[in-house]
Image (tube, rainbow, N blue to C red; front, side, top):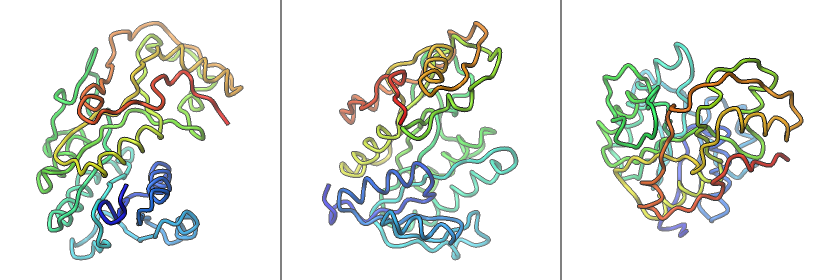
Length: 270
């Protein structure tokens, strides 16, 4: 990756995934900025050689949103939960308006939850960005493409990595519904490699699902991983075999991506 051609990069929302991505891009000799809502996080970002930028959103005025001059902007903001989620489309819309005035590549981390309770295999065409949608994430995507139609949207499945796995939150739970439903997960390493390729190839105006190729049953993977992590095994009820299964075929075909972790059941804990 060429630092003059592909950088600098701004990561808006430098949390768990953003920090990992920032460290990877820095290893490729790119200058990386990362936003945080609190200056108390500056020392941690500085330690990773990510240049900290304080940013509070939503903002009372677009003129108050001050961002460094970069070539690529990665929006890695969690939509939040409950009432906090109501601000998410507004936040993305404000960013999109500010960034529309700049000649930058925009990549947004979205979620495969846009497909909600769709059954069987889902592809990118099964959910379209729509700022009027009651689904906050679809509405946020719509707000983005309204002002920045060349943005790239990456719909990420459930994230996991060496220091994070959803099995931890299920440990010991009883009679969890739909134990036969296929699991849609993606390793942070794969999100990072996909993002880096999109930056390098200067991809614009696309939507991609980012999900591991294998979709083990919920009961199988979470009991296996719980055992591997020496956690109390959860128990499951039958059902859900026709639940959604997220396809990443478009990503693999167009970007020639080969997943580093195609089988989430092979997760190894530190």
